[in-house]
Length: 66
Image 1 (cartoon, rainbow, N blue to C red):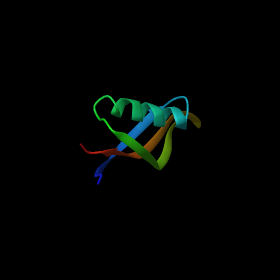
Image 2 (image 1 turned 90 degrees about the vertical axis):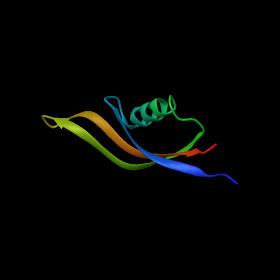
Image 3 (image 1 turned 135 degrees about the vertical axis):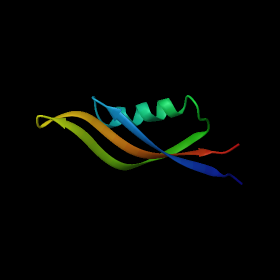
């Protein structure tokens, strides 16, 4: 039987949504192990003079407990 924990992350990127997701997961993997899945919960961004300057993605990441 497996038990999982979920945490919420916010990834940011000036390049795009996919990059924001990947950077959040990569950073989390530095201190967490057994990462198994993710789910995007929110997408937003930062504007400057009506131009998109940054993408922000809120995601939940699940990992299996030892």
